[in-house]
Length: 361
Image (cartoon, rainbow, N blue to C red):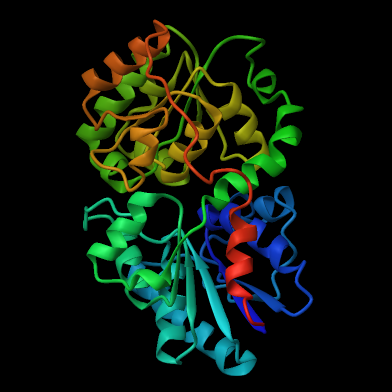
């Protein structure tokens, strides 16, 4: 059985790593890893391959950065060549980035079965490019692997045949568990000038948060106020850095806000594990903080991961500075909700996926 798996952007790498490792344990499978090159610089790509022990890609499409349409088109053109040459029996895609949708479209038109890992997540907000990618991918996939029971229900409502849907758990947690001990041995905070102090950790990159000067200003003003109570470590995304400069907001990320460059997986996991609270607009961090039991404030009006709210540590605060301040205050006062680790977030999701992929191989 010949399987091609796709990695394209930073969120993909944590998801594909345990699947690649599990596939390598199956002698009957010939596996090829394709890197589309959607994230192509060292901070966004190479360091993750190294940290997560992902083997070098068999094929690198090197598509680079562009608009959504141009990038998707480039991936499709190059990946079609790969499929025609390699003739895979299955294409495995993960997550919701442009690479996920583009490779799914190519495979579906060539009548190659597609397996989608992390299927069924829905924010119900079609202004998010990721939501469009999810909807298209799930409508075409032949095997849909879900992280939570609500994702199963989303797919059934959309008319997906139940026999295509497999609840397997969360591969992000597989990766976290594998590398947790290595990450714990680091002392990243000390390198940022913090020695045993409590701190908050923040990420912020979504266009809806950083491209509107009034929204970004409000968020950063609230974060500046929080930083007077405890330091805020802020590994800054290139897009956010550019907007802060463009909107002349540098004064709001001084003092107790500690700006750093984007980090590798292990360094960031170390900081997240020890943080007093996390503020983010990332999807994956909502899941990781839930597993780690770290309070999470999601700076968005919706989430495609509601299990992190109903069972986990996550709360949506939107972009209202007052809500962000109020929720942070509750955490600092020790007044936060009880949580638990969701079902099947146990480090064995990739095993379940590969067992289903290789039935009858």
